Image 1 (cartoon, helix red, strand yellow):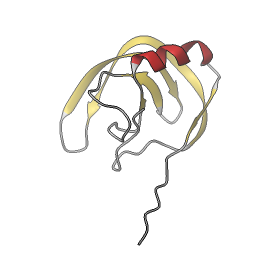
Image 2 (cartoon, one colour):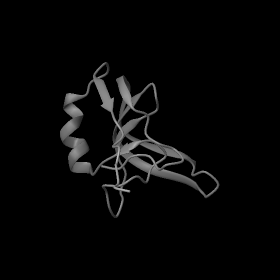
Image 3 (cartoon, one colour):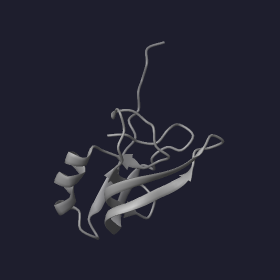
Image 4 (cartoon, rainbow, N blue to C red):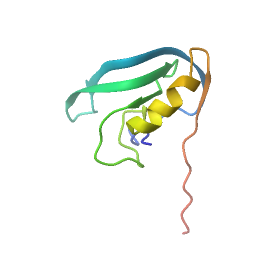
Length: 100
């Protein structure tokens, strides 16, 4: 999965799903960089705009979104039936502690 970059981190907390869609287009602007308009599938939205969805990426597993939670299609397709509207969704950022 991917989460938000440092300038647009994924919001931590637990929030209910209020919107679901099978296919849509997400668009916006990366801070000071470029506009994007990406087709996505199997999306679930919460009040914090943290969203679980599929967007085609060459790699997953590190922050590269504007706060959304992204995952490969197979993962999103598996999760989809278990996240109807009202489902609590928990988002927690990983804290990495490095030795001094």
